[in-house]
Image 1 (cartoon, one colour):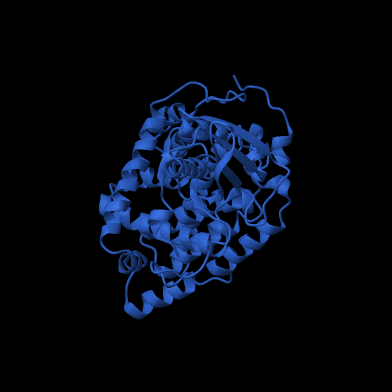
Image 2: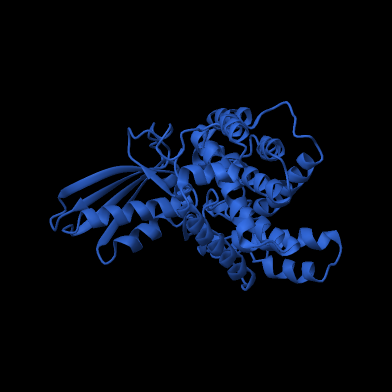
Length: 402
């Protein structure tokens, strides 16, 4: 498995696969072709179908400035390696091709080339299944976060602290804003209003309201192209920060405890990425919101004192009950149903943690089994339900809520 540095990435939304990945690829191609007079970029499959709403063309053009860039939309072509394919072409003054590069945005802002192995053991994490990691923890009498330190080194804690800071900044930035999100849907921001209501509610509902508010704040930041952390993607970026921020406030947690929770969440996300997918274009929203909910559930269960078995159970339950969740962004924007779905998943993650804590941790379906099932389910989903905006809610024209 890859380092957590390849899972958690800080960047601008609204999409890790449609915005952050293409931006990283464009920066690399630009640096490798300084003598190009202009560029042409072919976008394939899902990148072409929902690229407008996800600002794919915008970020590529902006990255190549001041050189001119032509965007060629090719939604009908789906490359067998991954649906999020793109071909960068450098041109001379006469329009002749100088160089080209076929690259894929495979989820979470990660870019890969055709033929590059997407899964498998690496020098970072020799174990890629939850059961194997749990056995390692049992043999060595250590916790999950210590397995992260064992393989990443002490420097991972500095990195995770930067991620924590960026997540908290996204919550606070989102809470400070009102108005309408960009796009034809004209969706209003709700986080600030939710927070005003929640802070005056001293019942248990007030805590739930704060989870909603903090999660909405980040999801709205992402929907508006703001700065967020892929956790594991931009489309699901609000779930972990929203719950993390609320738990920290509710239980007066110190940053060291939060960082351990993030390490647990990150390892869960890595296992999903390794054995299935975190790409909505490849696996539907179960791969994004479902994965984030599992990560958040494991994090919360750890923070609330759960055992190794209970943490695994919480993560399994959270992902299991998102199986089959479709990715059908209305208008191609990461707004409906994405933002509301983030808020619901944050609370579901905490519910999964609480449920697991009431058990002894023993259960029937393992986390590894549900991850495998999620990957298989993603392959079985029709393309209309995998970030193409061709099916589901995306078929309808919704009027502005304002």
